[in-house]
Image 1 (cartoon, one colour):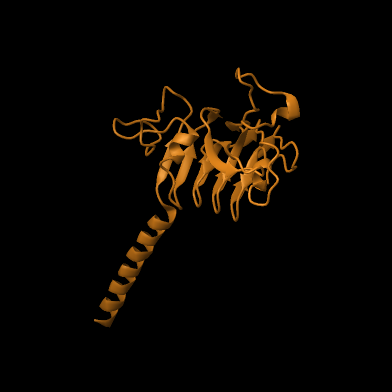
Image 2 (cartoon, rainbow, N blue to C red):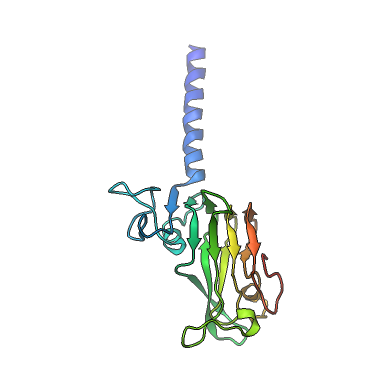
Length: 212
């Protein structure tokens, strides 16, 4: 009988640990930049559309559903250049402004490529003028330039080429200094960047052009 009780306790313990592991790892989501294979109308819960579930089309779209700590997003190979994600920030002059990134990975969420950095690209953008033309002044860093990636606390970025990012310039106060840092990646506390290639990223007047 004692052995039976012991076995039951072990079974209960294993089930409890398994449940805890599921909670810790969260859900899996998928994104694919190919419009013939993906859509932001899908739920992101399958790598291939099966009639019910399918991959999101953009990084911004998939991060709208993958926002719980422990969630993992698997990105299919390709070039991610569509849409931006923005956060409102108070500038040093006291005026609110949006700061844009191609993707903002929520706290505790992992964004991982399926094919590695050689085949998977997150591309930022220089500022543009009123006609939509790229601005060359200040190496493209301006009020509407686009950083590639922002990682919130404990988020992870694995296996991407991060290129063409431009951090906005001119924000120097203590609470928003990060806005002018990291044209490629801005990584908050305890976040992780692994197996990534960074190139051609600019932070005009605050340094740390690639990653901060």
